[in-house]
Length: 202
Image (cartoon, rainbow, N blue to C red; front, side, top):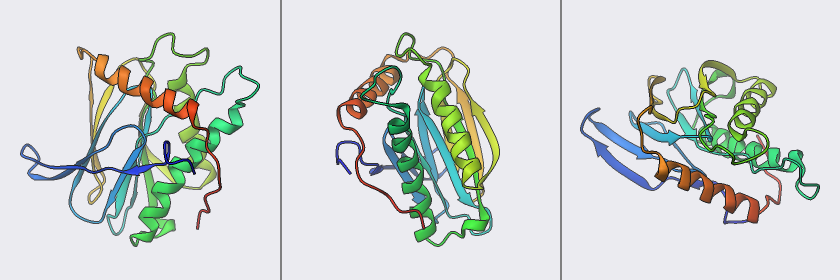
């Protein structure tokens, strides 16, 4: 796996006074998982986040990813871009299972895929990301218990794995240049560094 696009464990940890708990903030290409009563937070534009948890033990985590743009380029078929999404999902699921979650208890809540990068690609990347995450979880028999996908607004997502609670704030008046630039930089990195290697799901 090329380290430039390898999923990274988020390192931005801080104490959130509003929710009175330790918090992990994840950026594009990052994930975080925990068995502690923590908060995981991210801001999504076209990217998608899957919040996956064991509904019995409360062990869970969140990822934040985007499919590389595989549209129209013969050297970059859509199936190759799907491998990156599958990798992002597998890393999170594997880490949650290693931490003690049981596969039969996993459930998911999925968010993002907003059409915020106008003119970014011939196929709406947000819609592709949303469709991918639904299809992937269906194929893995992980039930989606809540979702807020597509639309045109960025979202701030707060996930409490211990309880499964998720708060979603639609950012309608956000000056989202920073978010758009962050996602465009991430997409450029994905395009420049194609996925290689296999990941085993156990």
